[in-house]
Image (cartoon, rainbow, N blue to C red; front, side, top):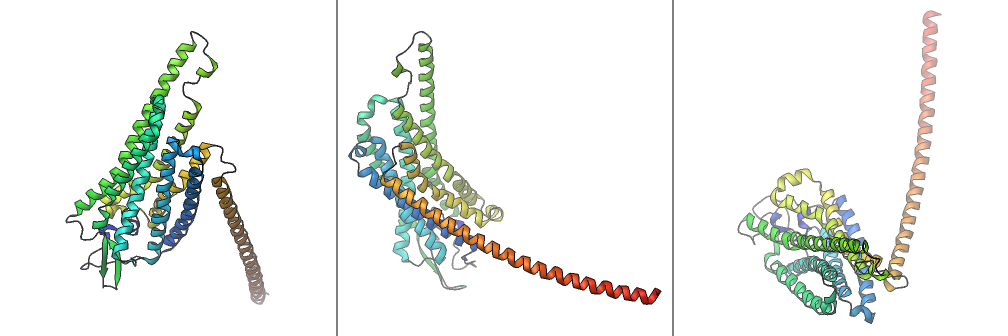
Length: 391
């Protein structure tokens, strides 16, 4: 299945063996659209994340911020998605088969999963950091060192959990119906349920467990804010508090809460449909292939890749003070470029539509004139016949 071939873990054992009849993939219209959109997302994501890294590391104050440390590492993970996952997906959909050799097959599948794990784990760390900032505000002095250790652990875990890709994936070549090479896990699993278990383990680490941790963090945060508001209201009913103490949560921490909620929300929104589709395919592949069109599978995967573009944009929108920064100038240039391209495309389609309408108007006019002449001749003929018969 084409969806599985270009999914998170690669093609998998859906690539049939040498002894079975293989339906080779084709570069369909849906795949062509997917390639174009993937390359577009690649340019946007790479540009935005590099601008975010440049902006973050060029400011000395940003280097000491425990929250920005996490966001910069998230930008690195998203940049890895932009430079590995997106070009790989586009190239693989164009070539249809694997043409980079066995070593590149193993290495790129490892880097692909490493980028996904790193992005998920660092997003989870952002939630934990936000929880600590709200629930333990006095511990912020040690937050930078703690986050640094947790980031090392996150990257190490990402590499460790992605390491099986180096041994499971390999190139397989068939000779019938023609020579065709694919990067696949075919033959690496003794039983089909072994592959399903491996995919489910990846689903747990990449999505479900991070989602549960994020949900627990923000539940605790919301309960703490609710408790603070209740105590503040009961206290203000007895005496008028000072102006500074009316807000139980400092504005900087509220802004951090909003930022982390937006980043986590984009992660959940972008990847939930894709993982649900993956679960359906792993357990009921025949039913899923008969129900979900390849075009929809392409759209859901692209929706997941969109998360790497949204993270840096979300950060700059919620961080504030981005006018005049490198990120702002790059994004402004990108938007101006896309506005120009869109304007040219709309102008082209307008002229093409105008030409087509003029052509159809001329053809319709000629046809109506022709039918009018035919109808006129027929009526004249019938008139003469009736005149002969009854005249």
